[in-house]
Image (cartoon, rainbow, N blue to C red; front, side, top):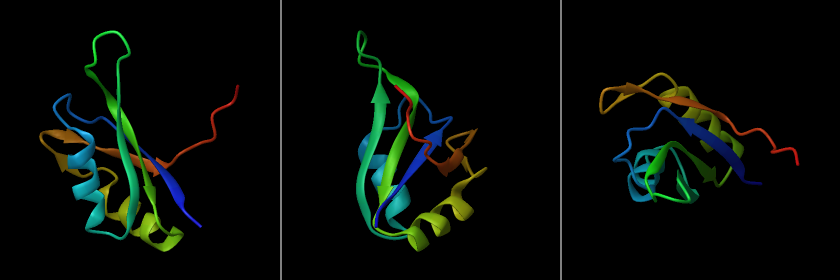
Length: 84
């Protein structure tokens, strides 16, 4: 079963490929998406990564939460279900 991870405090230059590469070091990445502003197309500074299994997700969270990437400390945790 795959696990969805929230990644916050990204630089505005970070793109989905960068996110995929960063998380691939910790296991299979099914998808990586940096969220962009609908009007400007500019990154909103956060994204989501779907990892192949829970063990890989835990390894990635443990390794990357609080890690300094491009001068910013990442916030990495299990994504919460969005309420509608």
